[in-house]
Amino acid sequence: MSHSTFTRGLLAAASVLAFATGAQAADIKIGVAEALSGGAAQYGSAIRNGFQLAAEEINAAGGINGNKLQLVVEDEQGKKEEAINVFKKLIFQDKVLMVFGPTLSNSAQAAHPIAQASKTVAFGTSNTADGITSIGQYVFRNSVTEADVLPETIKTAVRIAGVKKVAVLYGNDDVFTKSGYDNFKKALEDLKIPVTTTETFAKGDVDFKAQLTKIKASNPDAIVLSALLAEGAPIMVQARQVGLNLPVIGGNGMNSTKIFDLAKGASDNLYVGSPWSASNATPENTKFIKAYTAKYNAAPDQFAAQAYDALYIASQAIKKITLSGDLAKDRNALQAALPDVKWTGATGDFQFRRFNDKGYDAQQKPIVSVTKGTAFVIEK
Image 1 (cartoon, rainbow, N blue to C red):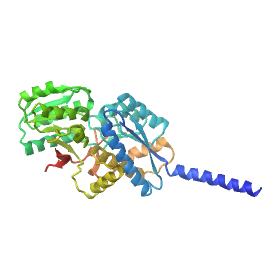
Image 2 (cartoon, one colour):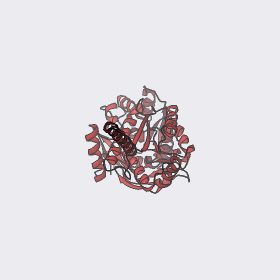
Image 3 (tube, rainbow, N blue to C red):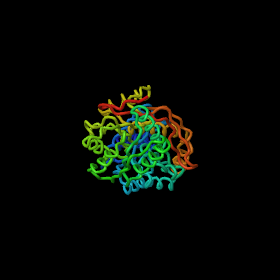
Image 4 (cartoon, rainbow, N blue to C red):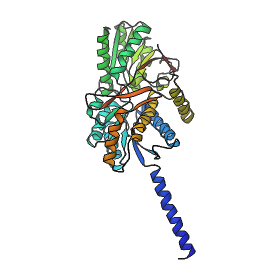
């Protein structure tokens, strides 16, 4: 063998070794299906940022048992059909270990059955409608349900703002906003708070003056609003325009710093509940906010925080299992390990609770905040 042939052989061997090492260093593929375009991108972009920040931190600290996390990110556009397509691609084509997302409850109801049928963990970080985890034992979420949060939000508004009677306004053509309405209705009944009128709207509506005029005539102390930001922000603006300068009690869809841009000058006095608050000065949350702000030059929101924590929660479960290379076996092992994970992160102390012997919901205490200026201020 000539010297040049021997040298070429060494280089080829080194190249193969480098390739193999590179592949091993990025061999835990995690699917991320989020709305990165369309109306729901206001949530999805922050969620993607939260995942990316957590993945970079985990990988910089040595990964998981020596292996690096590789996020496979897809845009499901906030549409049910696209969420189904993206889940199929991630599970069957990209062969990810698990899938985070999708962003909205509507999309989760459509796409999570794909994951359940293929025995792949689907992990929601932003959907809060009732019944999502009833799809099956492979469905998890760390987003606290509206059923858990809304009663606390109402109680706080009653105590702080002296609310005695309310008008209700909700989107009647969306799984999330209808579920929010159902939970608001039950909470108001349980707390014996009279409803002066109930009005509805549909996704894509831009003029809410007719509903708001009826609400004003009913003389409530507050507006209970189950809406996503696309409709919720203009509702707040138009409410102020018709002279409804009342507290607004909102659900998960309104809990975003985007409200300050979208309802500029009309965003004050919005009550929302979540396990996360920018004003919660725990060491874990302070570290998250500092890292997120430095990386993205913007303040994080609840959705970024929940995604960030979710990847750490999943990582704790992945650490406990031995990845065999048999994808079906590894997916089942992850599903078995996840329920026992306990984690303290940006959103506080977290653990799962089983939903009707099927999937797993979040067990966390909500924090109620109210908007003042350009901040969510914790109400105690």
